[in-house]
Image 1 (cartoon, rainbow, N blue to C red):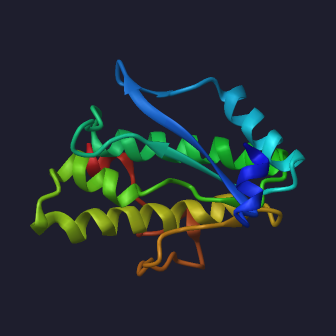
Image 2 (spheres, rainbow, N blue to C red):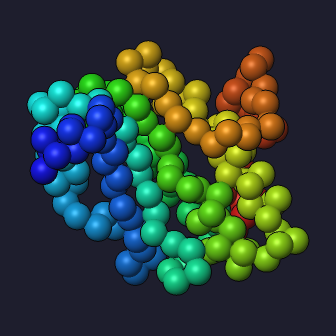
Amino acid sequence: EIENIRALGVNTLSVVSHYDYRNGEPVLANQKQDYIDRITKAKNAGFAVLLVPDFVGGENSKIPVSLGEFLDDARNISLEWAQIAEEYNVEYFAPQNEFDWVIRFSFYNNAPEKFEEGINISNRWHVDILPEIKKSDSIKTISPKKLPIQPQISDKKTSNNKISKSQYT
């Protein structure tokens, strides 16, 4: 299988750690070691790796916790996988996959009038988490194209842009 992929000219493989909610808690679709094994197999075969956590959601599977809880869960999961990315020398890391889409469908029923709000929440979340992930120089991060919200450089810990759980509970 790997040789067929290489024959297509592919040089980077993605490993997506899928999460869903069960009983109000985020749960991996497979064992964590399964994803780590995929990373190792790809790297041993000479591929670069893109690692990205992902919440299954959207119109067929809505996130069953409050937006604030979801943002906190996504943050914790992203930081955990960023550590794994660093430990296994993953070349590329995205904090979440299609995060704005999950927010729009799960919390705003994809209502057109809430489209911008969902994107802004996703953008703000990325602006807050990217500096935490970038503490490591070995990981290249990938994020949404549009990040209009600028973090306050003077004091990131007290940034007015920071999303807190209480804002969305």
